[in-house]
Length: 133
Image (cartoon, rainbow, N blue to C red):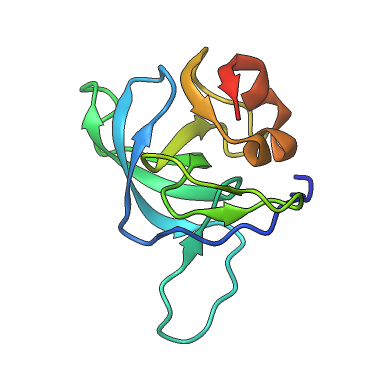
């Protein structure tokens, strides 16, 4: 994983529901853990754009239901600041399913918008995305 150029406010936390942005078969995901989070006692782990989270599939195809999957957050509602001073936010929280060892996407295409910060860290997501903002 590479560093991100923006200072991202952590906009999604434990038990947040995310939309699945790829065509892997999952529709709705729920965060159960954040990879690499070192927190404070009794504080809920939080994640932002470009972070790897562990989720369970709440809605989707029958073979995907109730599975534990690794995802990368590609959109968040909470606005964050880029280094050029612009602030960016999206209409929903969304993630892309990835392989836990190589962090390559399991789906073959992403038809919705993906944040540039997620593509900076995981370049394979940018290759299957239709639009990067």
